[in-house]
Amino acid sequence: MYLTTNKDSLQVYEALASEVRLQIVELLDGREMHIKELAAALGLSSAIVSSHVSKLQKAGLISSRMRRIDGATFKYCSLSVHFLQIKLSGAQDIARKVVELSLPVGSYTDFSASPTCGIATTEHLIGFYDDPRFFADPEHVHAGIFWFGKGYVEYTVPNYLFEDQVIKEIEISMELGSEAPNINEKWPSDLSFALNGKDVGIWTSPGDFGKTRGRLTPAWWRPDVNQYGMLKVLRINSLGTFMDGQQISPVTLQDIDWHSSQWRLRITAEPAGRRRGGLTVFGRGFGNYDQDIFVRVYYE
Image (cartoon, rainbow, N blue to C red; front, side, top):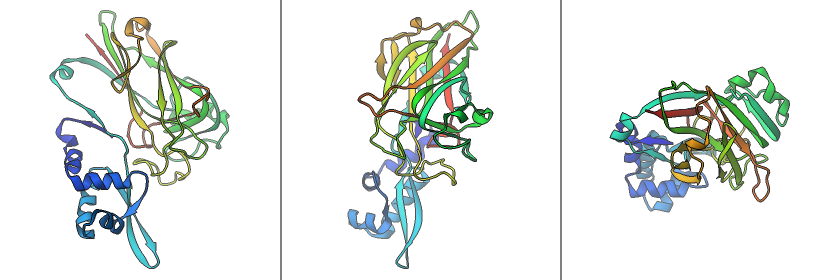
């Protein structure tokens, strides 16, 4: 979940500003629990726990479903998100000049994919599971998700800067995960990133998340397939290349041919090796973040 320091995110902060609600989040990490189970674990009444759960639900942190067991109805709760990212707003950001664009995840211009793999729109699967040929289907431009066990995707990014404008930073945010047969939340995968043919760094995805449904997962989506990923922010500036603020390589803007009219962004699932491999890319209508690949170019 992507948060800022403006009032739009206040509901989430308020929901977490309670020791009891933080305990509920910890209890739900890894498994579903119904209200009575939570109440027993916390030593509180079901009514009080229901009130706390309601606040977490309104903030989008918890989801629930009703299940009938032995003639009784239980409200089962699970985490909707496992990670929060907070953007601290400031005067410096307000003053920065920026060009923004959104790349639909299916708008790749080159690819290589090997099973296990698949591609889908928000309405249906494109072709069949584990058949890489359908990555070339014309409908791929409408995809909201795709995954493969080995391979890469490459996007053409237009450069809208004028000759007299000087780039200061490139920021690329995207929801990513590993790709395991079925799902496996402990399935590390080395994902590498390149811009204009220059390798800028590697990030290791911890797993293929699927124990709980993604916040945006379509109702028809199978439960044994990738559900959501992690929102990652890649930044390249004069100091190096960073993932979520942590430096992953010394590659700077000066090392990249950013003057060209088009840039090539490549994301690769590296050969398994000591990692287990695979890549899943989530776009609008899938996962936990309602965005495609979002690019910001800061300049002066």
